[in-house]
Length: 181
Image (cartoon, rainbow, N blue to C red):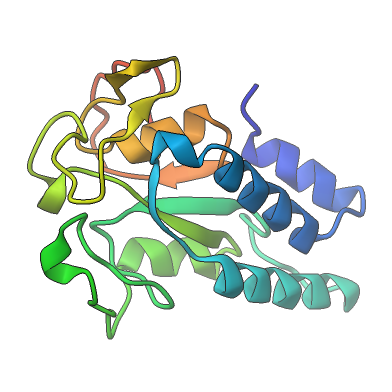
């Protein structure tokens, strides 16, 4: 069963720390590494962000509409505190000087970036087989691909790694039956 945004909000309202939720998400990511859903994990910045939100909660401050919700973005999206490769070795050491509007808006509402999802290099492909960082395996059948260029995002959600994944604005038919946000 996939954890929903509502589930996370309820856990926080019931007193669970944001750090605990992020640690739980990171543990799920580590446990499912064989599926190759993520190009990178943003561990330390995510935990630091969680601690900041926990401090706000202790002061009674609002943490945003998505406060404490872990998310991943397709590696095509630029984000601070992580290498942004577009799943290509050409950019394997590229640290973005700025961040995608999508990431800014999610973080402004308290969501916490935990990783960059695998995709076809530069978004060119339809199966997540064309990533320089390996093929994303389908969570329902490891002998199959996760599908579409956003397969890493879809597989990550199917494996309950983040509560949300940002891939594309358009929804594509996905062979693993999970469509990311």
